[in-house]
Image (cartoon, rainbow, N blue to C red; front, side, top):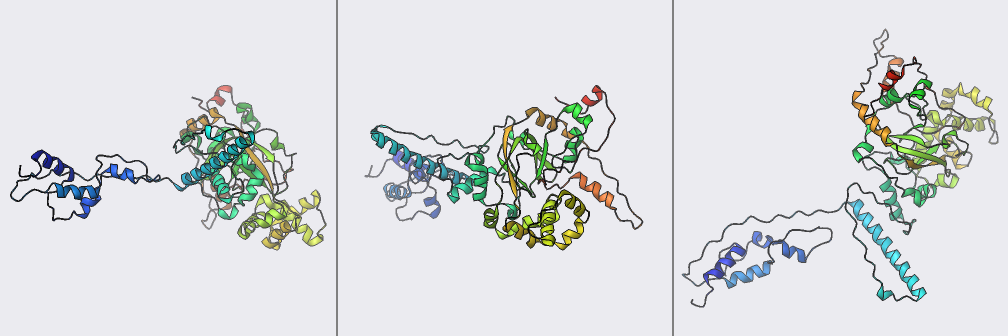
Length: 473
C-alpha cells in the first residue's frame, strides 16, 4: 500500500478533523477554536457549569493527526463532510448566589474546626470520621436562612443576611435605611433569618391589591394605618386586626411574606400599646396600588434609636427622619414637645392641655421650627425613635384566596371633578383623587391616639345581602 495509511484510516481521520490532508497547511483559527466539549471538561471552571461532549480531541492532536494522514503525491482523497460547529451555553451564578455559597462555605469551615476541636479534646480519632456536605439545591424561590454558627458581626455576612430579607423588586429610599449593626441589635440574628412557611404559591402570596378594593370588601378608613371597620362590617366578617404599613417611613417593614421586619414609632416603644395584644393582619405597600398581605404579625417593643445609635446613622438618614417629624402628622407630638422646650426651657414637659392648645396652631409652629432643631433634640437624647419588632406567627390562606378571587369583580369608582368658577379643581376633588391610592406613612404616633374609625354608616343588610359581598370559592 506504498507505506501510506489505508483508505479506511483516511476516511476516519477526515471525518474527525473536517479538513483535507495537507502537511504544509496550517490550521485556521476557526479550526483551532472548534474544540470538542470533552476537551473543555479538562479545563472546567466551577462557575461555568457542565457542557455536553462529543469527542476527546485537542487542537494539538488535531494538527498532529493531520500530518499523519497526509498522503503521497497522486493519491486520491475523499473530501470530508461538513459539520456544524458545536455551541456551548455557559450559565454563571448571580452575585447573591455567590455570596450565599461563600457564607455557607465559611460556616461549614468554622463548624468543621469546632468539631475537630471537640474530637481532639475528647480523644476521638479524627481521621476515622468523614463528613460529606450535600450540594445545595438550586431553586429560584429558595431563600437561604444563614446558620447561627456564622460570625454575625462580619460586615459581609451581615450585609448578605439583610439583603436576603428584602424583595429585590421593591424600591426603598436609601436615605431612610438604618445601619446593619442597628438592625442586628434590634432584630437579633434569629429574627433576621426567620422564615415563616407560606402555604400558597408565590404568585398568590405576592399579589398586590388596591386599598380601595380592600376597604370596599372589608370596610375601614382608607388612610388609617390601623383601621377599624364599622360595626356593621365587623358583624359580617369579624376581622378587626388590620395594619397597613408604608415603606416611606417604615423602610424596614417586611417586603416578603413570612419575613421579619421592624416598625418605627415617634416615641419610645411601650408594652402598653393596645395593638400588642394580638397578631395583626399586616399589609405593606410595595408599589402604587399594590398592598401585599404579608401574614399575621406579632408586634413587640424593641430597642429605641438612642443618642449613640442616632449619631451612628448617616447624615442624610438623620436629615430625612427630621424632615418627616417636622412635616408629617405622625411627628406632630414630637414637634410640639421640641417647640415647648425651645420657648419654655429645656426641662419643661408639656401637659395634654398644652398639646391640645398648640395643635390648633400647628401650621405656624412648623414654619417656626427647623430640621436642625429636631436633629439636635435627638442628639441630646431628649427624644428617641422607638421600634417594634415584627414576627410572622401565622398566615390566613383562606383570606388571601378570597381577596384574589374577588379582585376582578371590583370596579373603582371615578370621583366626580368639582370645579369652581375659575374652572380649576377644588380641594375636595383632589381629596377624592388621593383616596384612590392613599399615601399613609405607616408610622405610629403617640399611643394615646386612637385609630380613626370607619365613619361610613350603612343600613343593616340581611344575611343573604352580606354574603353576596364576598365569593369564597
